[in-house]
Length: 200
Image 1 (cartoon, helix red, strand yellow):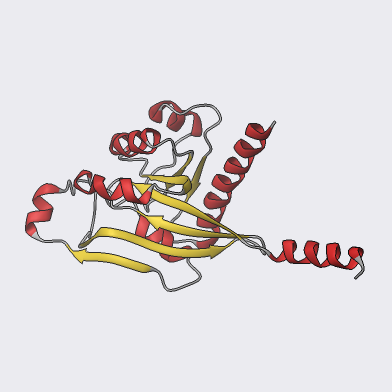
Image 2 (cartoon, rainbow, N blue to C red):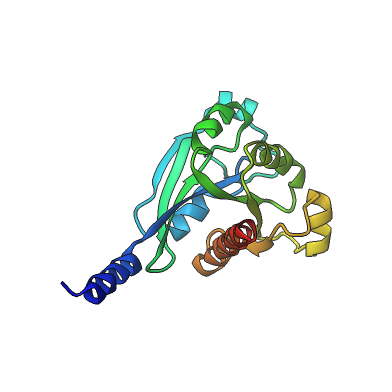
């Protein structure tokens, strides 16, 4: 058998192999995680939303949140094929502190996290960022632009969130596919850059 033919077949098979990456989409309560995954997922997203009861409303801070009637109680799940080689599995985590135990399970095997933040509620992002850093997950920040909110300068957001210079930050609209995809791609490029640096 011609070894050149075998090696050629092997290269061809290698080119067809897809890499699956687990990505977390995280953020505080009512920041748009479910919307973000639903906008990007190429399959019907798995959602575990429940109607909010008065008991939940008494626990969860609804200040600054308009029309919020449901909340994620376990996770959201979606899939996005970026190219022939890379498939992203998107896992959205609940934003409330009482679901911290879910995080421990969700972080296993995750390559990175996209942290959605509301520019009008930045302080609520600190607890989420602390959890991401606690589990050693590299992350990028996606500032979800809500209707009627005034845009804030990147330098102002970086300072307010106390970000490292290399941490990506990008503005997006979780309802818009192109905008959301751009935010996700910024995270993937950051993760690829970190991998290359670690391999040197």
